[in-house]
Image (tube, rainbow over all chains, first blue to last red; front, side, top):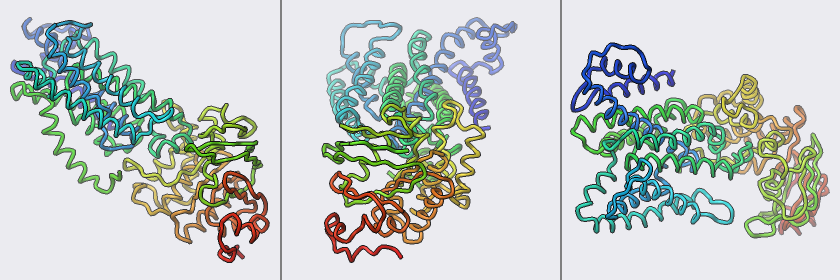
Amino acid sequence: MVAIGGLVLLAVALVAGIAAGSVSIAPGETLGILARRLLGLNVAPTWSVATETIVMDLRLPRVLTAMIVGGGLAVAGAAFQGLLRNPLADPYVLGTASGAAFGAAIAVLIPVRALILQFGLLHALAFIGALGSVLVVYRLSRIGSSAPMTSLLLTGYAVSSLLAAGLAMAMYLSGTGLRQIFAYLLGGFDSATWGRLAVAAPLILIASSVILLRARSLNGMLLGEDAAAHLGVDVRRERAILLTMASLATAAAVAISGLIGFVGLVAPHVVRLLVGPNARLVLPLAALLGASLMVGADLVARLLGEIPVGVVTAVVGAPFFLALLRRARTGYEL
Amino acid sequence: MIRVDGVTAVYRERAALRDVSLQVDAGERVAIIGPNGAGKSTLLRVIAGLLHPTTGTVELGGDRVDRLDRMAVARRLSVVPQTPLLPFATTVEEVVALGRLPHEHPIRGMRPGDRAAVAAAIERVGVGHLLGRDARELSMGERQLVLLAMAVAQAAPVLVLDEPTVHLDLRHQVEVMDLVGDLNTRDGTTILAVLHDLGLAAHFFARLVLLDRGRVVADGAPAEVLAPERIREVFGVDPAFVRLGA
């Protein structure tokens, strides 16, 4: 039931996300264009060539990017929450966000413009910064051969603070590039292209699928790492795989969309309220919900005249999250 | 069933076990006792394969535990965890269902047989009246029973408990120990429990293993292991404080 609801929500978000915008396109025409171009159906065109171009070259890559990013962040968020056994964890908890932001700021400061794969320099450095910071956090928090979760969380916080200082310095030095850094920090999909999507989507989809297939390990972690081991989970291996995949999905997502908060935090919680903590249900449903929420947030951002999506998710997400916390008051024990 | 042979193990940079040998046969019920820091919990970690000994070997059902993968260990030995805090709202039946982790389909999850095992474990431990409740809202005694039901659902021939009665009032202590005894006599489950309470240990277990500073100093019937001079020596208290049950 919930799964069907999620799929319907996603389909509605897809059509609405394509139909609405500065030039609005009738949902019927939207469906027609999608059916003709994507499914190869022989639908007689009732629309202009310009409309088709808007749908195929501007709206569709944008909406699909929002979907992939939203879904990926939600899956990564659910994985981090489960692994760290911390309901406040989000995809950025291990320093991904500040690493990406710092990378993007450096890209703005470098006077050379370069294209790496389909990425601009900014996206490429954001990706490298995100992955690099997680790697540093992981290495620094290692005690002997394992990294205890508390130490991972605290190291993540410390490294993030350091990177935030670097970011502040870069912004101070950036002069006219400041606006560009800010636009990245607030997040958005206005720079989405098929090319960028083609680079990021496989990373996010593969990483998310690997996480989805490891739902059993995440379930075992509910009672802590020792209990997980007693239930048959190879804790060290599974944790390494899940951390790597969640970080990869997050890095790819922030590289193409900037820093968009709350979706990765809220989507898994909403799903848990509906279906309980079983990761086999939480992960796929959070992906659907995260994808729909992100398309919706992007839609609102466009209708309000291209304001940053990160602002929309924060304005909607924060009060919503507060309401959620009050409802589930019985129980966040940390 | 369990065979510990000449095990020396280091835990948290301290020699926690020194040349420990112990054999527990199928269907036995054994309590491990000893003062704090004697190595009781370390011994359980070594037996469960979570800690590798520096010397010596541990066998579980005839195979060396360090050569079995985690899932195989989990099908031979279940451990009742010490009441952990749950990060998310989790119903009683969801907690019990975690016991099926080593048996369920890795991708699709529980099969009908797993659901039947969960229902049977809930019935066996008698936590049916708690179904639907968030496990975090239960009392300590209720939580302990739910975790025990989870371990029963795991359906392993050996059940290991680490201080199962530690936060419980007397009635719940007896309830848990009665149940554990029943799992042993009626279902033939081999029981290995770490206990602090010497009275409970002597009352509910026919065989006690006394650890002191990482060594086994006595192994046998309660009256023999808990001899007054040994209590004075190992626990450093007047033996009159230890009243052995009727």
